[in-house]
Image 1 (tube, rainbow, N blue to C red):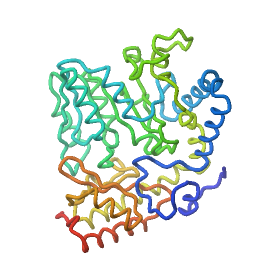
Image 2: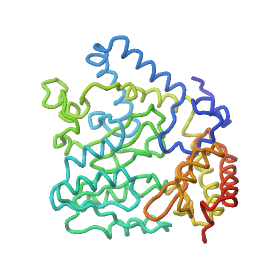
Image 3: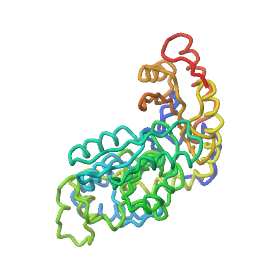
Image 4: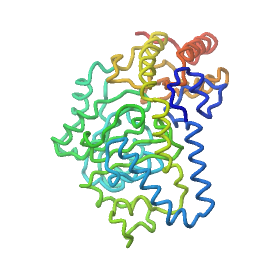
Length: 398
């Protein structure tokens, strides 16, 4: 890998396997793997297939631990407090199965990821707990507004807090550090969904005071698909039964950690994606990724404001780095978000999500170093043409 700083978006795009004919504004959904990292991924897969038994039984666990050590250093957590999981949904299902009790109230917001809402509601119904989706007023005016509204959902029955650090549909960064500190003061269990956080904004779990934290490495960290993690504080590790019972359960191995044995060894699978963390971190270092991201964040604020202005809707929060990273969502007045998304891709080769969240719809763009501001101009031009030729959306009133 080269050591020079690549500043040209076209050069950076060449480092990825993405289709060059697509205006790719949806990095946030599933990420995209750089070629160098994907080569590392295939290297591990070939080693696995060369001697499957030795790799899975003997070599693999050693490599897995090395990758976990690298991840822990990057996100500010001890490797012994981390397990790899396929995705954050798997992690939250593991927690939901274990920590709810009859009569509990779990406090969250009305802006959480849909799969998480389904997970918590299902498990709350199973045990007789209550899932409290506290409404948050958008646009946000300040962190204080968010914090006040969030805690207005608290009651004497509240036992657990669940919150996204960056929400999927709005792309907003929530003041999770403040929420965690207050939750600790009130003696609550705090679970943070950080699916969009690693590699996107700085993360130091050791200072966050969360009891549990899950994040995706296959999004902004750019690892291969199916690479995520669950952090659990030592206080809770031995209380969690695995989602899948397998050979790690009640094992007699010398690993020395119930948490690791129960949850990391849940049956045969290709865990090559987990082993690519060192390669993803090396890619970021070699290409000075954090420096490149500073320009991305500036472009998000600039072009996000233009998109909201064009749509005739207000930004969802003050245009400040406290609320925005590399994601920007703008409310769009449409009753047909799925159709609008399909037309943008089919007719204009623009890959971008148009999502429902409650009674509102949002169009959300991601901005990586390979993106150019002109791509957002092309999005606005496409939307204007769609507006004048169809009835899929109408301009809002600011």
